[in-house]
Image 1: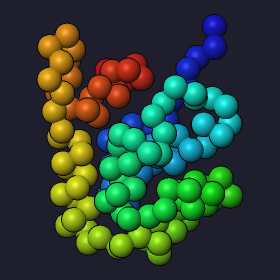
Image 2: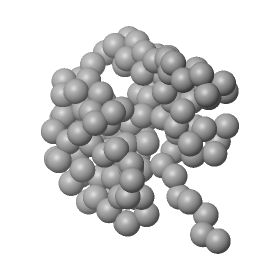
Image 3: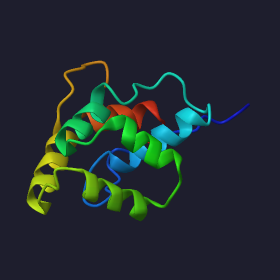
Image 4: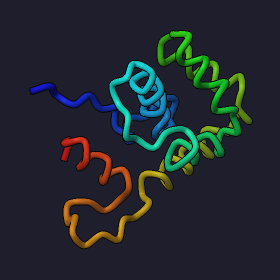
Length: 123
């Protein structure tokens, strides 16, 4: 049996930002043919992040696919985004990770990030 490959948790911060590392992983995994059924770039947390940073998602996707470390990709984000303050990033990340899920059938989860963790077998 082949083990499912998942992008990193949205809770894993990169440059203080929730979901950025996951977004990078989703781009890489999608183009490697390892994930097909994930919401991608234009919806969900991806869109929320793109809108917050005010970056062009296709340009970011091309940059990720060109290669580089997390730190190099973070530098690209900082150079090509609206450059939010550390406080704005912290508030945005907290808001993303604290957004609730009103799903009674999932008693272990309280946030959207927890839903992802549960779905990807980390909870």
